[in-house]
Amino acid sequence: MPASSSFQTQRFPVKLYDFHPPIDDFRSAVVEGLSLPQKTISPKFLYDKRGSELFDAICGLPEYYLTRSEMAILQTHAAAIAASLGNRTLVELGSGSSQKVRILLQAAPQITTYVGVDISRQHLQEACQALTQDFAGLGAIAICADYTQPLPIDSVPELRDQATVGFFPGSSIGNLEPAEAVAFLKTISVLGDLVIGVDLKKSAQVLEPAYDDAQGVSAAFALNLLERINRELDADFDLDQFTYRAHYNPDAGRIEMAIVSLRDQTVQLGDIPIPFQTGETLRTEHSYKYTIDEFQLLAMEAGFKPVQVWTDPDQLFSLHHLQQL
Ligand SMILES: C[S@@+](CC[C@H](N)C(=O)[O-])C[C@H]1O[C@@H](n2cnc3c(N)ncnc32)[C@H](O)[C@@H]1O
Image 1 (cartoon, rainbow, N blue to C red):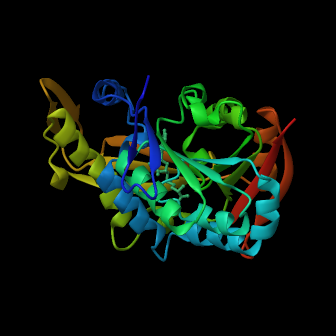
Image 2 (image 1 turned 90 degrees about the horizontal axis):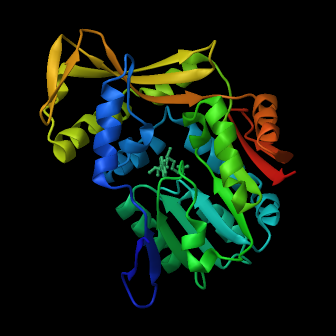
C-alpha cells in the first residue's frame, strides 16, 4: 500500500498517493546501467527536484519550440480538445508543472477531478496544489509513481469505477523505443481515450539546438543526473570531466542525448569502480520523432483508433486524440 496524505491548506486539500520508487531501485538501475557496454540510465531519473526545475527552464528557452508549439495547439483548439475529454476524470501522465492542462481545464469546466501522475514528488504536489487554488471547484489527486510501471489505479479509491481520460503532453512518448511505446500505450489504455502530444520529424538544424541550447540549460539538466548520483548514491563524478551532447540520428528518427567523458577516468559508486574512456558516452535519453502517419500506425498497433490530430501552423508538433478500438 502506498503512503497517502492530504497536504497544505485545509481549503485546498490535495490527496497524495505516494508510490515513489525506493532509493534501492535507483541504485540498482544505476549500477546495472553503468555496467552495460553502452552505459545507459533511464531519463526518468533526470527528474529530482532540481531536474524538474531545470526542465521548466528548458520549456522557456527560445530553441525549445516543443512547449510553445504544443501550447499554441492547445490554445487554438481548446474547445474541440475539451469536447473530446467529456466530463471524465482527467489523468495527466508526467504532469510536471501542470501548465498545459490549465488551457484544457479552462475550456472544460465540466471536469471536476484532475489527477496528476509524476515521479518528481515535490514538483507534482506543488503543481496540483496550485491548480486547486486557481480552479474553483476542481479536486486534484497527486499520484507519485513511475508511469512505465502498471498504473496503480486500483490502489486509488477515488479512481475505482470512474470514467477517465488520459492526457500525455510533452512528447514524452518519444523517450520510449517504438516497441516500448506500443507496449506502454497498451498499458495505459486502462485510462480510456488519450490526448497525447507527439513531436514531429524535422531538420537537425532545428532539433539539435532544441536539445542543446546556447545557454547550456539542457546540458545542466543532463549533468544534474551525475550530481544526483553523487548525492544520493555516494558517488564521486567530477562534473568538470564530463560534457553533454545531443545528436539527431535521421536513420533512427531520434535525438540521442548523452553525457560524454572528457578523459580516461574511474568513478567510484560506493565501493564499485566505474571506468570511463575518453569520449565514452553515458546515454541519458532518446527522443523519437514521428510523422503523423507513423504515430497513428503505432497507436493502432497498440489498439487505439486515431480520431483527430491537431498541429501548429509551422507543423512542428502534433496533438492526437486516440480512442480505444
Ligand atoms: C518532458 S517532461 C514533460 C512535462 C510536462 N508534461 C510538459 O509537457 O511540459 C516529463 C515529465 O514526466 C515526468 N516523468 C518522467 N519519467 C517518468 C516516469 N517514468 N514516471 C512518471 N513520471 C515521469 C517528469 O518528472 C516530468 O515532469
